[in-house]
Image 1 (cartoon, rainbow, N blue to C red):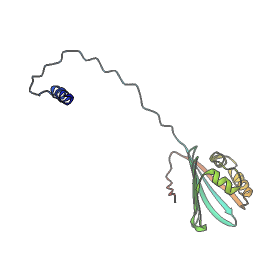
Image 2 (tube, rainbow, N blue to C red):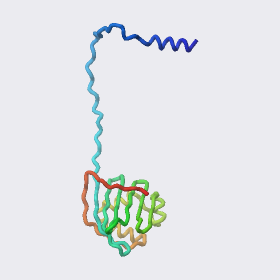
Image 3 (spheres, rainbow, N blue to C red):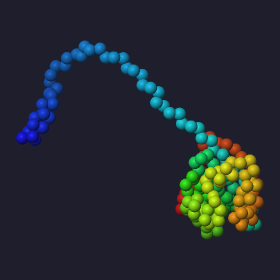
Image 4 (cartoon, one colour):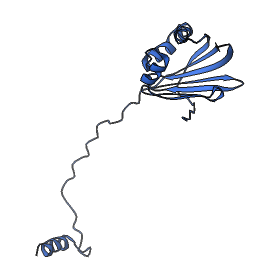
Length: 167
């Protein structure tokens, strides 16, 4: 019985298109302009730092790219790529296949390995500072690594292309 009522209601709602159309004479209110819902996309400035470094007697060139409060990439080269790393606020990836070194993990894991507290905010503050080379050398020394770093250039870019493949 209930199924018959539902079927009747559905069929009653269907109309044939054969009826003559009657013009609607009611006034249509003017369209209200929609509120401006376009959001402004914040402009992100990317900082690119070129450097030379000598680590444990090996000279190399590198480039650090920083998207503030988001991600940092670094690539180190000497004729071939020696290694690359990417750091986000919650994770770190390091790949140095020439030295058979790989790391993918959190800052807590990296801090345990380094026997020192390390965070994304600290690394970014060091990278963006005016005395980044001295701070990086001091950090390396605290970790027992002999390193000399020299900043060769610093620029800002409106966009970056830096493919990084996690392993």
